[in-house]
Amino acid sequence: MNHPIYPKDHTFLRIAHRGGAGLAPENTLEAFKAGLACEPDAVELDIHMSKDRKLVLMHDPMVETTTDGQGEIGNKTLAELKLLDASVHFPHGSLPPHRIPTLEEVIDLTGRRALLQIEIKVRADNTRYPGIEQQLVHILSKYHLIDRTTVLSFDFPTLESVRNIEPRLKTCALIGRTYFGNTALSSPEIASFIASLGVDCIGTDRRFLDDTLFREYRKHSLTAGVWVVNDPEDMKRFADMGVDFITTDRPDLLRMIGDRSLAASH
Ligand code: G3P
Ligand code: CA
Image 1 (tube, rainbow, N blue to C red):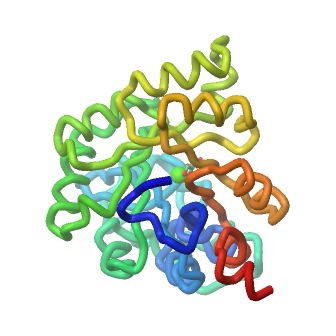
Image 2 (image 1 turned 135 degrees about the vertical axis):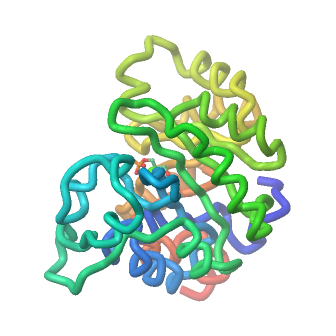
């Protein structure tokens, strides 16, 4: 893969999913601290917008999935969200309270230690948060991170909106169970459709990415990655396939794979 930000000694970009969701409660500062300690090439994170229009990290639109609260994130102010404990559903032991971070808090922590993959999420009713793209571009510009960020989404109009606001931002379409469950397209047709979106990149759920589909992506010169890969054998398999990035909850395991210098010394 020829890319100006592609590390020379890696065969693919190693992405810490939700900061490092297998290491600490997902999308919290603690997850990013644990993930960054594994020296990933990039961190992936999910953003929603609070009632008072702050960008905050969470995967689901409903706070009960990961916190001790209830209700929709978009109906709560940042102050209300900050009272919640985002550690309560982490499966590995009981932890002190972990707070929901803002995007800016995560950027302050990450700095330039890793590239950013920022996924824009939608509300519980699948509608877009009005103005979330402008808000994101504003923050990335303020921190001079436009050239270090890829914006991801399952919602393709969101990516078009991002490109219209800031054409220098890279965009990456995501496809997974919902997409594959609703399409009758063949692999060549899927790749052709994704290429027609004008995105830089395609991220595919690991359960649906095979050699045939990957080859079709390549025919369209799409940068192509896979998520969420936590098993080391799967990591090796996708590395052998030639993917451009692997996204994992376990950046500690992934750091050993695809690193030519480490591979040579083991
Ligand atoms: O990076 C892509 C991946 O995060 C998409 O899936 O459900 O974990 O946001 P999800
Ligand atoms: Ca995500």
